[in-house]
Image (tube, rainbow, N blue to C red):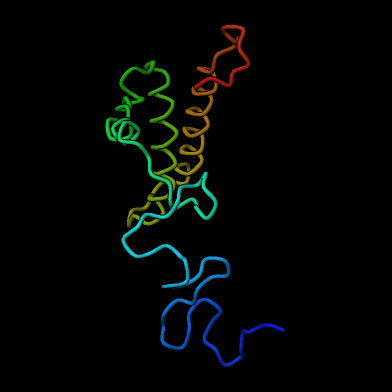
Length: 141
């Protein structure tokens, strides 16, 4: 039969809010770790993952990390790639904005903008490499 009662707040904390001793660890004065003493490490029985301490060299290695500075993708791109991206994105934004403007746009505005989007996508598609370079599986970044 369990010593847990239904009217107790929890199995971990008693009525006074203090933690209850876990089975096998004992409480104060019952052979458990005394206050101020460090608990045994993970290799020692009774030690857990929070008892682990990393050495200072590992912390220095973590502290010295600087993420790489990403380059602007348009700075070194081919002019055709920039043109295709500007046409596609600009025409899509124009398709979104034009209906809300208080002007009377000609009836051919929307089909022309759709054509510009398609032309930009075709330009981008034609800039893709036709053959693979290298003998790798393509999983490299």
